[in-house]
Amino acid sequence: MTVTVPGIAARLADRPEAVALVESRGRTSRTTRRGELVRRCHHLAEALRDAGVRPGHKAVVMTRDAHDLTAVSYALGILGAVPVLIEPRAEVGRCLRDVAPDVFIGEPLAHLGRRALGWGRPHIGISLVTGPAPLPPGRRLPTRTPVGGAPPARLPEPDGDGPALIAFTSGSTGRPKGAEYHHSTLAGQLDALTALIGPRPDDVLLAGFLPVALLGPLLGLTTVAPAVNHLAPARTPPGELVAPMLRHRATVVLASPAVLTLIARHCARHGVTLPSVRQILSFGAPLRLRLVDALRRAVPDDAEILSVYGATECLPVSAIGDHELRASRVRPPAGHAGTCLGRPLPGVRARILDADTTGAGEIAVTGPTVSPAYHARPDADAATKSDTGHGVLHRTGDLGRLDDEGRLWFLGRKAHLVTGAGFTLATEDIEAAADTAPGIRRTALVGVGTSVCQLPVLCVEPLPSTPRAAALAAVRAVLRDHPQGHRVAALLIRTGFPTDPRHNSKIDRMRLAGWAAGRLRGRAR
Image (cartoon, one colour):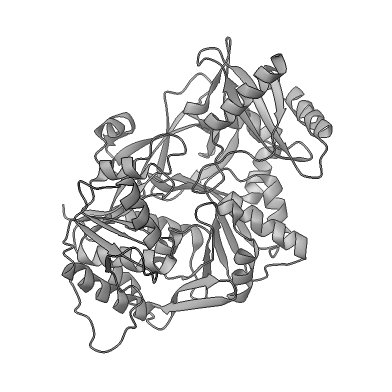
């Protein structure tokens, strides 16, 4: 059966005078309207075709500029080529060997890295430079050419359900893999986000994560791309986030907990409120109630704060509002430790595979938002993908349960289980409780030692105002009331946890476990 989904130009065709994208840098902003974006994308598609790019070509797009990323990716889609998105901090050379791209399009810094490190050398035949800098030499792609004069040729967009995008995982929990999205996958993600957000004509979306800028205009939303430090989001000057929210009256915010923490702290420190915000969507890591409380003080009482669960391979899966999240922490159903993720979104089905006697097992999902395959990784497909009557079933690698209300509960990653002598601890089971201790910013459970007999160590990051002794005492008190708390063998104070490069929100447990092992060896001497 042939599947036809709306093309990029068709999704942008309505309201040509409405603003599609606002790039915010300090006190300046650059605005692109929807009609202008369509015309520019067709001009770019012509330029790409003239440069030799053809339908089916795989084209890496590596730039931190929201306009260039959006316009180039849309233009490649119009042409029938496949954009490839890779984290610039990930194992780029290995990713390029996996994907074997035909084209490399990027800002000057990306090209310098490509040349110095030999990224994609055997495969890349077409190299195009974005941005205004004079170096490196190479053919420039006119992403900022003024739109005027003769209208561009309207290239016919692909009308089937072929490959539309390859998005690499961050590699925070293993080797990065390229998740293939078909046109129907992107359509499913847009439909799910539309159901979640309920876009309004006057909505303004703040994109706290660069790829969100790709989706915002397709959702019909004016999308503000602030000057996030995409190499280290948690180091972004918070004023670069809050100022454009106020200036452009942002109504919807999509960001990771690390970025939301910057916003909440800035508002508290400067007595700022965000009166236009009606909805905040947190994604990338579990949302803690301490952050919810800080955000609540900055937004109107009727604003909705949602914790969204998903992964690069299946986004979004489920969502839960902060009021239900709070209730689930105060009165969790019997046997449901961890963090509630809410109910799966319409069209998404969640299952628990290989469940134990408590009902805990691996979360697996099917639905229109699920990537059908990894690119050139049959080993990963064999381990995580299977065909069902409801489409491809994807194993997430996350542990969880389903309760009697059909809600998902998250217990942590399978790979992060701590296996001791006769017991096993799930990270989220311990951390969700320990993080409620007064004066604590966050905790992280890691295993030290061999995989079959690990020592459970809880790393503790206090708030700056909390003395270390008080922080440890507060965590110990919480653990005494937890059924598995007595299993934790050691507590270690650590200021600043290593985190994933993409969101700065997922904890890098391998690095943290190495640090903990060194501290414990030092104590033993």
